[in-house]
Image (tube, rainbow, N blue to C red; front, side, top):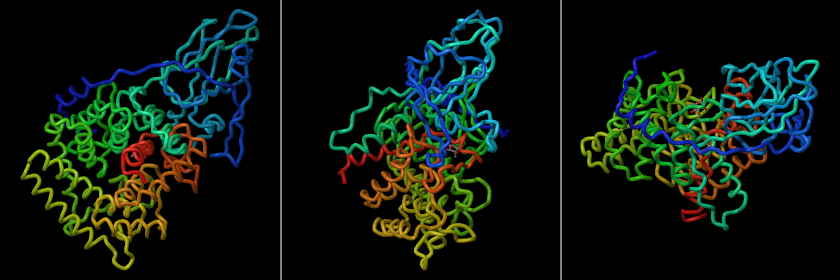
Length: 522
Ligand code: RAM
């Protein structure tokens, strides 16, 4: 592990902002069966299999199993009250519990898991209960809609029933903060907004988690988008502030903001560095300041933002272009073949521009001058080296790759003027280069880029298609990955460990509330 830079006063500020969690009890709605069906999303469909009233008096014998549907996505702690039937429990009860956000997690056998992420992300648990009747609360927090109970062992004398099961859900999001959408907002957007808000709500814990099932930690790329939605919805601005102070308080050896961090046993930063993610400290601070006008925080964290820009600029080569390489140095999207150079250059310019606004706001003239000139040279280099006049696209890397990500990020960086950007995006949609988009994360940036160059109608059309597709495929909360052309897509080698409630996909509420409701409309 590298030596990290710790700024304890910042960490202390963050700790003092740890929110309290709201808790409430939810109950399963019905018994269901999960059946294989090639036509259904990821090959599994859910069929009703009985009421909860029937379930509470149902006698389960060794080998029996039942799947309960909580009716919506849950994050919390499960309690089961268990009764012995026919005899006292002369041997411990052995149960297997499986939790799934999606039917595939219930339908598929975890024994066949072949992904490269640790199988410990699969949500299952074997418990032994020594005393019956009894009440058991699982110590781990689970994230699920479906819960499967398998009775692995009783004894030849007794069976069991479950008179009550519930989940105590946890979130730091205050749902009472949410203003209802005006009635003129069409029903499909109302529904999309509800699901997006639920997604954010379930990710809002003592930090903005990326996904409450996986990875259950704070990533700055996710934080940036969650914060944007938060300003339009829950307005828990202290949680954004806490996260900014955590990132500022623990940095990598050379001063970079790390890509992600953990809270326990005490806050610590992971070793992962990503070029774009470190830079997002600047834009996240800019967005936070724009939403809150919290000058004190801006003053304290400004030096960290400046450092991120300086570090990122050091990666420019002699031609003024981000030095490319084959490692995972920059994120942009989950796509094995995506070359990151042009996107990284654009993310640099995008963040420098926000850094410039902050420098001006603070009256930090030296920095303003420095950043202004960095923007000019990075933009000029992008036009000289990365803009391909013949193809009318930005190209990336040695192979001069044309991808969706490169065009989207260059549009956001506003290297071209608004009209040329609009034409670039039109060309992108029309020519549809092979290196496409895999995640709602990149889709968010696509929609934002369309809005930015005045193409709101197209933006909402694309958003309705993509996030609407997830709804049609059964989303209770929006997903980490969604590729309509490959619905089992997973960067982890198995869709079982994909996160189905994922921070970076909650941005429809931002678009709907900021542009559809508050903006000039469409
Ligand atoms: C994954 C998570 C997270 C994201 C990183 C880059 O591990 O999905 O949300 O920010 O990748």
